[in-house]
Image 1: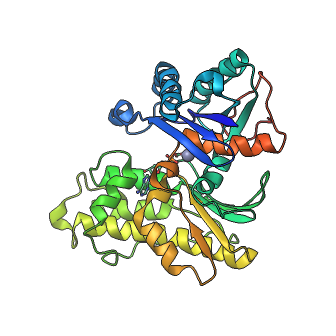
Image 2: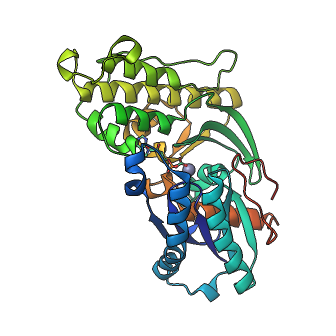
Image 3: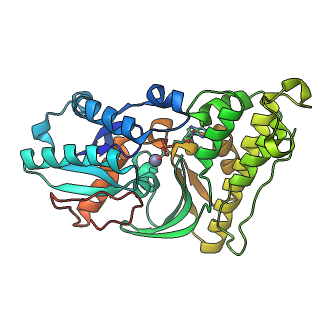
Length: 341
Ligand code: KG4
Ligand code: ZN
C-alpha cells in the first residue's frame, strides 16, 4: 500500500511517500525560515500563503522522488491537528482534493502522534508499547504509546516548549533561526559547566517540564539583572558566548533526559523513542544513550525524520488505516489537537 503524507501544520511544507507499513520512499520539505526571519517568529498569514503557493509542487516532487504516479497512491494522510489553523487548512484542502479525484481513502493525522511513531521507519524491531519524548518548537511532552491507537500523555511543559526556548536563546545570542541548530553549533566548543543555569521542576508533577526559567536566566546572564542592559556586552561576561550556549543546552538536555528516564522507571517500559525537531540535538542524543540504564533501548529517528516531515504523517496514517480508521471529506482542522476525526 502506497500512502502519501502531507504536513503543513506550521512553517514547513512537507510531503512524503511511504510503502506501508514502514518503508519511506521519499520525504520532501520546503522550509520558510527566510520568509519569517525579519519578524522574529512565524507569521501565520505568511505561512498559509507560502503553503498554498508550494504545496502542489512539494507533493509532485515527493511522488517523483518515490518513482510513483499519483494514480499509484492507495491513500492520503494529512496533518489536521494541532497547528496553525490557516496552515493546516492548506494541507487538508490539498489532501481532500487528491482523495476525491483519485477516489482513495483520506486519513487525518495528529501531528504529535506522528512524531511519536517517526522512529519506527528506521527501527524495524521497535514495537508497542514504548515511551515517546516529543520535543519540538511547539511541544514538549512524554507519552506512553500502549498500542497503535492508544496513546497516554504522561507529562508536558507548563510554559515554553524546548525548541521554542532554543529559538529564543538564539535571538539573545544574535544567531539566526531556527535557533536549535544555531545554538548547538555555537555550543560545540563551549564549556557546558561554565554557567549553572536552572533545571526547573514542576510542583507535584514529576514528569512535567518548565523551560521559561532557564530562558529568563540566560537573558539576565547576558543583559544583567532584570534584563535591562540594552546590548549584551561580551566584555562584561566572565565566559564566552560558546560557553553560554553550551551551558544553556546542557541545562535543557539534562531536564529532557532526567524526565524521560524517570518515565521509564515509573512505567517499567524499556523502549524509549524521541521525536520532534529537538531530537536532532547531538548533546541530547549522546547524553540519553549514555545515561540510559542497561536494558533500556533508546531510539532516535535520523535527522530528516526528527523535524516536521510528510513521511512520518504517511507512517502514522498507514497505522491508522490498518486499524480501520479513515476520515470523511468534510474533515476539519484543530489548533489544539482536540478535534474529532
Ligand atoms: O518538529 P519541528 O520541526 O517543528 C515543530 O513541530 O515545532 O521542531 C522545530 C524546533 C525548532 O524550535 C528548532 O529550533 C528545534 O526544533 N531544533 C533543535 C535542533 N534542530 C531543530 N533544537 C535543538 N537542537 C537542534 N539540533
Ligand atoms: Zn512537529
